[in-house]
Image 1 (cartoon, helix red, strand yellow):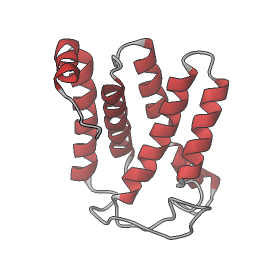
Image 2: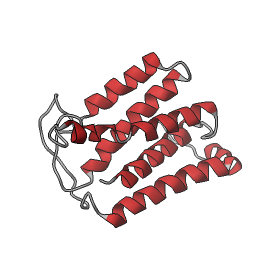
Image 3: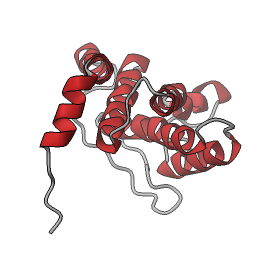
Length: 161
């Protein structure tokens, strides 16, 4: 996927996480999670300038967990939210690349199976633009309408049994 699709997916994942946790996206915790997610969503592509094989080792959920743990341990402000955001952003990149045609091992080193859902080409302008639009729309909706957000949280009940 292109950068715009990854940024959109990070915003969408952040918005869903904040909504599920009942956290205001413009609060300190919400900004920490979203900022960390957006900042980390392109890290898996560091394999390109370094000269590693693309989508081999850096496109693994293992790195998402390790990055989240590092954020949890090192962040002076909102460590839980920063750690979760770093893992979420990195993981959203891996999830986004799973939507494209090119196979890769997202569970490396636990499993070397190469998978892909093959829904669209990584360079699809339509798919990348749609993901960016959805992410920006979801975050804007949550940030701009706290009254609607609170009403939704009050009116949705999920049966647990």
